[in-house]
Image 1 (cartoon, rainbow, N blue to C red):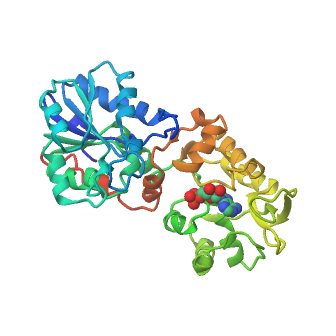
Image 2: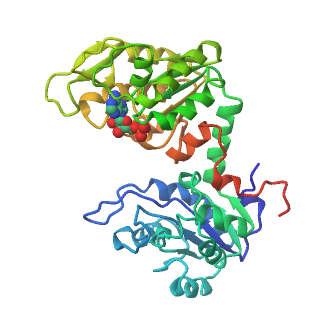
Image 3: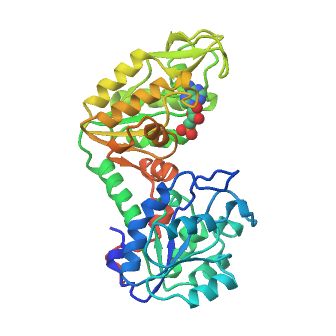
Length: 398
Ligand code: AMP
């Protein structure tokens, strides 16, 4: 068990709080288009303020690649936060510079200071020792509540953590609790629904879940590498040639492992991504050589539904088709609906599947919508997250 903010005394202490304020912005107007990430951080911020800490918030925003770029400034986030909390919020125009230091010196207990974007300094992503030390010198305690970046070994998620007494916030604490239960003691049957295009990202997840899940439903672009491995004709569908042997091995392994591996039966196909032609349906093993699979077909939707409906736990990561195009979004939307409606516990990894579920209007019915796509995938691979690993265990000396 990791130490949480409830296990430490923060009164009158300067707390460096790493949050995920990587909010979506309208690049033309500079307005924040979705406040979810800020809202989700409020419980930890408010707890620290109520317990009289001086709360110094740091985060990254976008990919400024180590240089100052006003388009990625956290100033609008600080302004938005001001409207959501009752405590005093100020903003420092740098991260470890003079403005940050003088504003920290002027802080009183319960005050909040938002530092400028960590990634304006290239040393952040390099987990640079000096940069980590500079960050540590700003505070007495380090708290990480940025689940979305826990899989990264950066100065603000890793380097600084070992230099200060540390703890995790409420958001990470909840994510860990939910994911640990899924992997160690899930309500069964445990059904994993995996999709998306990058098979190499999902292979370690399938490998880990083969002995843990009861069923693994595979859809989306990555299904075609498996279908080809089975000897099917997949036409022009997305295939990762380098992973065909691995897919074949998994299919073989699944025969003796706990989990049943289930592939699509039929597919909605077209001659290319942007074709204006009417899409055609093909059985998975017989896709025409001029066509590519762009969504799961109705028979597959029905088959996947039957597993999801009976599940004790459903874990979903990755869309079932090229859902960005409404012509191929049906499979993903249907799965979003069934995952939301299942009587079992529903878990949706961040990224595309989370946005699909929110777009479908069923977001509120998901038991746990993870705030970290990459981090939740890494967890499902059975790996420890660097940003969590570095936090002290509860038993360790405080
Ligand atoms: P990933 O990042 O691996 O989860 O992949 C997400 C992407 O997979 C989305 O942008 C989808 O458009 C894409 N995708 C899903 N199904 C297919 C497919 N059948 N062919 C090509 N791309 C797909």
